[in-house]
Amino acid sequence: MAEIAQSSASLRFFGDDLDPAELTNLLAGQPTYAVRKGDFHTHPPNQPPRVALKGLWRLSSGNGKGDQLDHQIASILNTLTSDLAVWAELVRRFKVDMFCGVWLDEVNQGLELTPPTLKLLGERGIKLGLDIYRRPRGHSDFQNQTDPPQPLAK
Image 1 (cartoon, rainbow, N blue to C red):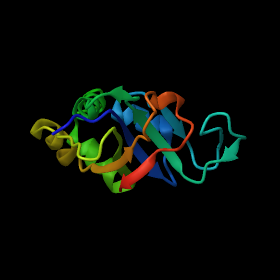
Image 2: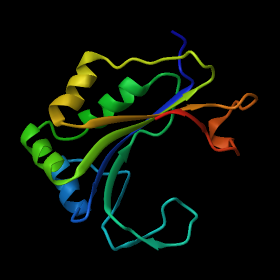
Image 3: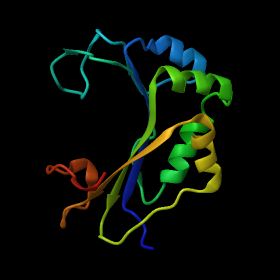
Image 4: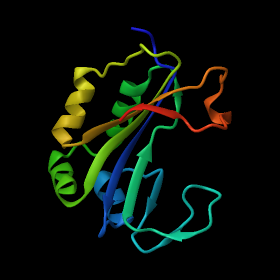
């Protein structure tokens, strides 16, 4: 199996009554980005301020070259509380997922997640979402790409 070109992972919580400070306290970790429903925010960056339609708490790994997805997911979860009762309550109250992006250079590429990482997701009740993209030919740098990624599967 050929190695993927790049990956990223983000643990996301969504909810109307989501209080970012409460989640930060319960999870014992700082988000990469958080906003309360009704607050003004400028995400994505360089956009005019707008009102958040839902609360969001997100912790992201950033982009990593090669197949680092297993490590990215495990690193995010290992920086947060291991108290499964806290996770069960948060999954009950909010929409929670581990949203991942995978970029391919070629068509027949793949990735694997290890049993310990799958266990971390499963025992916390976290859904795994994958967006898979194929990088257009001739593009060697994902950061400077002007064309949006081309979705292959969702």
